[in-house]
Length: 356
Image: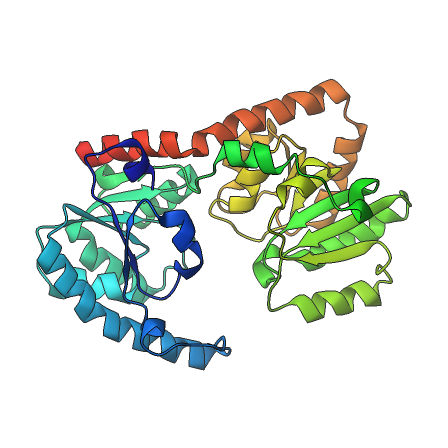
């Protein structure tokens, strides 16, 4: 999108292999949308659940897509193909096929490097032209693992946000139910990664000393039932609300007492970047990898030890006792940092890297 939006020299196509871009078609009208998704032939109306069933479907979709993708690359002969992680489809293409096309790897959501995965990545690495990493920490991990030539590894901010759209949306009217409430906000998939159980334990402890404080959690996910059960178990149903998915989360961000992320890992965290652009107080776990860089080692917010309840309570106390000027400076610093994650900044760096 950034290449297409700011330069006429690029003809950009987006390949939809697994249906991952189905919900973004209207936002991607500027690029050529190539659909290899199996659902166009056999509509999948029901979401596949269970590890085994989802893996079988994943490999079925991939097997059908490989031949189509191979023929596409042979026919169009693109200068570059940008791939997201080295999953088995690009691995097969890199190891067994020959192309003049340069493969560019974008690392996002760094996986566990098992012996087999590390071996395959290293084997395919010779055919990778460049590797883009969203955090400096990810770069350091890759260099330590010695999978890719360090000269091929570059830092490229990710995710990308549209600050003008955020500024417009955050000024929408907040739901009356919450407009006069003092609340902490958390956003994310209701999953193990987001570690909302720690957040609920923390909130139970601090809410005893602040009867006006509420907790709002926006998002859906597989752990919704267990989180609801924990809310009832801790008798927090009057103070904690699961909002589900919200089309406009920015109005909630703008009006919150603070935003808290208890994630066990990120890379670097879409919600953190969006929160940074909303000019609010951010408290985040110092997990791998991203929060520390987005919050500039604490100059743009507050960091607590990953998965540590006492550390979170200590940092929150520091926040409520801190003078307004210091909090204002943290907000200014993190908002300034968020400007690195714009389409234009992304285009400038990506264009420079591809042209070099």
